[in-house]
Image (cartoon, rainbow, N blue to C red; front, top):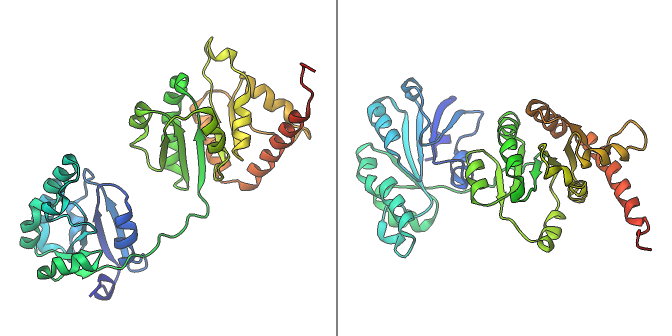
Length: 328
């Protein structure tokens, strides 16, 4: 019997997961329609008041971290229900033979070692496949049917494509994008960089760190659709003073609107584009984080404005392509 059938009124649901993941989205969340359940997703290190557990449903997704095992054990008597969901064979270490030792250690310490704990706590088992249903039939598991995640129709991709020479700009953007991503969950962020960039941004939601690539590969990469706002901050330095406005080309080719640093060559070029005197071909801002945060958020919410600005930039770049070479 599913939780949906059991629940008669809106009930508190606590989902314990390592991070947001497909297991929860495909299998677990569909069991809890928001019209009937108040769902709270918690990571391993996140804490909640024990008061929230009274008459609550708790679901462990794949793993059983120590902190949450202790809290659940202390409050098991007041829980409405306790579930453990697995979509891999997590409780039998032999099943992961041949996989990396680090991953097997994770399975051992966060799942397999705690099978008896689940039984002691009278947890109910949810599984994702008939194979797991048959293998763990002694625990009377329920087979969960996955459902597709609702498509994101209003997702906005902000991006920054800087090379390793832009370390200072990448550091400058970190708090800016931290604020933007916290305030608008429809925004995602794409940045090019190596391990240090990944380490800096990995804690933020909805961030893609793309491995650096050569120019030929980048020309194909930038033409892929789906980008909306390109960022081009340029800190004041002797090296940056020599940079041209080609960043405008990349951002426009991506089908995006750019935000550029004041006093940069890109800013001067963008200012020269506007033919009507009303619609700019991009935004030019001083390097004040608060201004960039608000500008990104405003553009993210204004599809029509982005399109008009993009068209201005595209027209100007098309005319440049027709200009005669100075070598002729």
